[in-house]
Every structure is written in structure tokens, then in C-alpha cells.
Image (cartoon, rainbow over all chains, first blue to last red; front, side):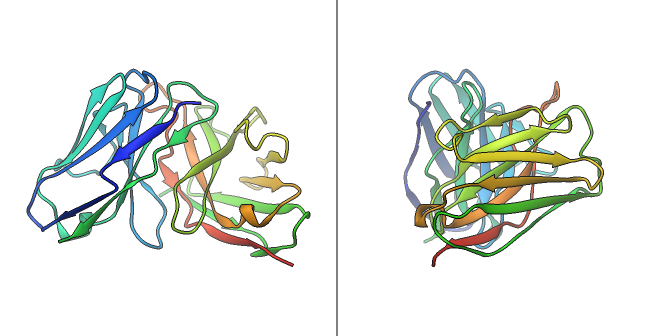
Length: 108
Length: 123
């Protein structure tokens, strides 16, 4: 099973700042990595698939990059609605699909 | 707009079987390019994929849960269901249903989700 780790666990930033979130896989997942956003009391929302492709309706301030074992999600300028928990998910070697433990982006 | 809605008991006794149904509206569950999945999340914790099924009944399960999980589909009702047997307190989580596309463009992610339903295992 591929294990995903995310860092940092908590990211404290102000609106307008740039957020850089990391996801690392225990073995190569090629580019088969997705990112989700989850707000309190809501289901996760797909942001990015295959490392760098924005899902339908996702604003351009969200961008993903990486391949192999190291991936990055960047939010270029945080909007108030972007404060949430972000999860990565691999689809390279499944079953099972696995998710990272999440990074909470909180208001500083 | 595709919508998914989980339904089922919110309280299950230890050792019994948890049963949930996901009703899909705004689209057909029978489209060949889509699977339909179950994912769970303990309160305040991360996400765990349980399994997925397509319209013909082809399934994939998480090996860690496979011995206790059955996912089925009812295309006539546009629904799919989850059964988890021999539940314990560790199975107390929010259960989500989600669409799992397997298309050339987008594959093996979860792009539409239900709102989730909390199931508590307690006597």
C-alpha cells in the first residue's frame, strides 16, 4: 500500500498570501496524484487530478505540480473561502486508493 | 447537476451489519465510464476508501476491509449500497458516497460526493 504524507500539518497564513502544500508518496506514483479541499461539515471537493490538471470549475489560483514521489499544491493568493483542509490521493497502485492525512490551512 | 445522497441508520449495534444506500440523481448510474464509490472519514480524521462498483456489478474493495464489505448496485433505482459486517466502535465514522470516473480524461478520482452520513456504532 502506498503511504502518502503531507506537510505541514497546519499552515497559518493571511488572506492574499501564497500557500504551498506538500504531499510525498512512499513510492513513485508517476503523475497519478489528486488534491481535494474539505471545509468543515462538507464533503471533499476535487481540485486537481493527475498532479496538474484543475477539475471543472476550480479557480486558476489553484495549481498542482510534481511527479514521482513529491508533489505540491499552490494557492497563489488565498481567498477567505480557501481556508480549509487539503488532502492528496494516489491512484497509481490500487486497490487501495490512499489519501494523505491532510494539511489544514488556517487564518493567521 | 449530478447529486448523490446517502441514507441509512445512524446508529448500529456492535457486531451487527451497517447498511447504507446512495441514491444518484441528475444522471444515470448505468453509464459505462463510471464507478461509484464509498469513502469514510472518522470525525476529525482523514479519508479511507472502502470500495467501488460499476453498473454491471464489477467491484473493487480496500483489502483492509474486504472481508467485511459488500457493495451492490440497483440500476432500476439508480442506487448503490454498502454493507459492512461485524462492526465495532472503530467503524464509527462519516460515510460518503462518490462518483468514481474511469474516463480517458479523468480517472480514478472522486469528483462528485454526497453530503455524508454519520454512523455511530454503539449498544
